[in-house]
Amino acid sequence: MESLNPTLFESQFFGFTKGAFTGAASDHTGYLEAADRGTLFLDEIGYMPIEMQGKLLRVLQEWEYYKIGTSVPKR
Image (cartoon, rainbow, N blue to C red):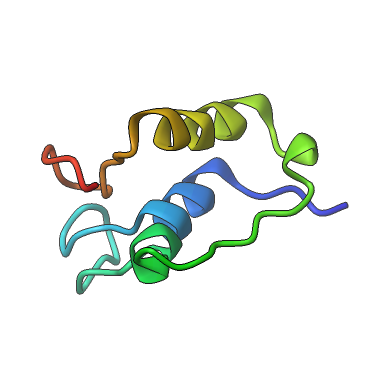
C-alpha cells in the first residue's frame, strides 16, 4: 500500500491559504470544506500513520480544523 505524505494529507484534507508555503499561489479548498455537510467517505484509516489518524480524530471530536496558513479555526 502506498504511503500518504503527512504534508500532502494536511493540504488535501484541510486545505491551505495563498502564501502558506512555497508554491501556494492561491487558496485551496480541502476535502473537509468541500464536503460541506455532505459525506466524506474515508476507508482504511487504520493503515494511515498514527499522526494523521490523530488529526482526523481531533476534527471528528472538536468539529473544527485549521487550514494550513491560518490561525482561525473552520467549523
